[in-house]
Length: 282
Length: 264
Image (cartoon, rainbow over all chains, first blue to last red; front, top):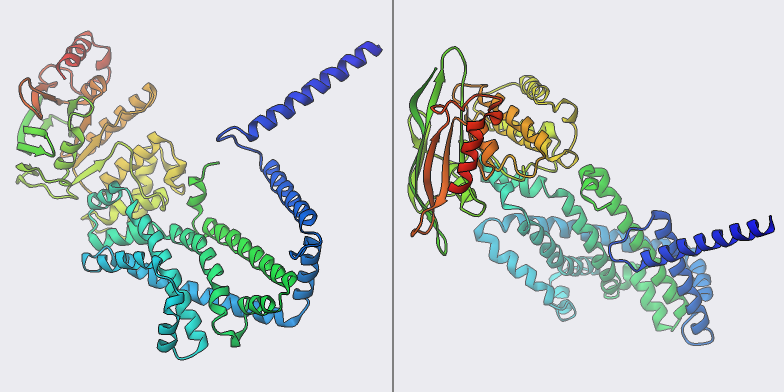
């Protein structure tokens, strides 16, 4: 009886060992698929590990520890002016994103007309222009701080939007255009069906991908005119007083907000365009 | 009893070259075939090896590509073909992935010369979907359908435009034998929907192409010449092989299939 129990225990141990080994092997196997719950567990493990390492190595130094950052975050969000600053940043980002995507879409659709194609190509190259050198020019061209920030933001984002949108248009299968011809559509109807309606879901995906650029730029442009406030203004002020706990706290808030928007935009794509779910690798 | 009436598609000396000749002096005709007491369209096969230039010929026949020399004329008045006058069902059954099956089919009707009300259009789509086993899929997206179902949608979409000529690029490719037989049944039923319906099948699948056709043309290279051309015309009606649903079981037909393998 005792021998049988010992054997069962050994078998159980072997089975458990084999399962663990197969799980570890899976983690290092290309294209292996993990269960969603396991994947979440993996992320949580990474986060805990990063926080622990941070706490251990940052303790006592200039860099604030996670505990101090958490305290700073609580302090920041408990002050009413934080929400005014957050609102200022969000409204500027959304207005900038909205205007940028409209301008980028018009440029991309017009690029299909040979007359406007070189303009679109030039705008793509404007990604290599640094905004810092253009601040003076934009200051002269705009009437107030708000417009200066908005125009710099738009000027910074549009080339990235146009680049992504044009690559979508370039990757359209020639057979889709041919299908339109066989269905007796003229050039304008083809443009509407294939490029505009057919790629609307991808416009949202481009917005999602480029939201990160806009969100990153917002703190930079807010530093140019601090009268309206914003998260960028908060960052600059905290940096000035070497209040690194607050700086890191704001950075973490900015990061979490960005991740949330990324998630919401991805979900919106599935809500508005249900067929996009079917094209994903499951 | 059948009659070969007027020419309804005429291909004359079509030549196409890129960095080398692809098609050389391709010429053939498709006649209106009539049979007593029944509505009989035409099914013509263009058979050739992979990479011989079938897809280029397919595009030229549909008006999507212009040959360097030569012409393609269609209709009873034999006018030069224009894109949109010949329905095209490509090998990968391209559909608009952002539209449901019902919407994809209604796009076919939008290009139709028949002006129908929305209710009439919906009824027509339902009728075709019902006839070809797609009723339960009308609200789905193309990505949710199997290859065979997408092929049927693609064919019906082209029929709904009102085109009498429909080109099918490799319609049997990648299908299992059971589905191939269903495709044959489908194509036969389409060819008999209207007297002037003409299906042109471009394929390397000799057996299935011959089994469904009334005429077949072999597209192959000739020794000493670059570029594919029509090397042989096979009149399956004259041979007694046309319009027989069980023709694949016929020994003479199988002998012909075997011979053809050496001729392409």
